[in-house]
Length: 165
Image (spheres, rainbow, N blue to C red):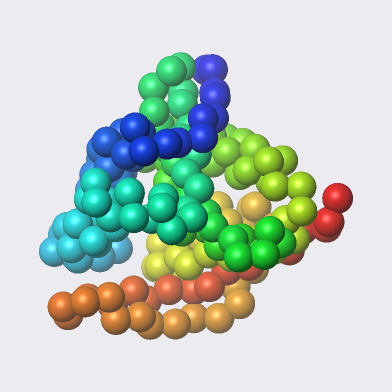
């Protein structure tokens, strides 16, 4: 398995949108309804939404396995020390192969001044929660966020502190 990471640009928006459709529709039906999945995909992964996120400062990185796009991460910062991970996904059929761990290690190496990473994860997304625990994240608190229509995100805020280098 050859693994590579590429900083995404606007030209990669269709790749990110396609990956999101594939990943979300395989992973999330046991966690949230298909109606909420479709609503969130439309809100966060339309070409327009992804372009807006990039223009607002979210940095996307794509993970390629044997030259095939297989995952992505997006994050942003206001102070170059604390980063919020907005999106972190690997294709379901690629889970448990070390791709997510290597992608996160790569991101940390690219951000030498980073001290803290934060993210929100659904409280019953046990696969992701356990992955984040293995990466050194801890649960800070839980919250419920109304995201539109009758939909809520019922999440944990997870935090990872790293030593400045």
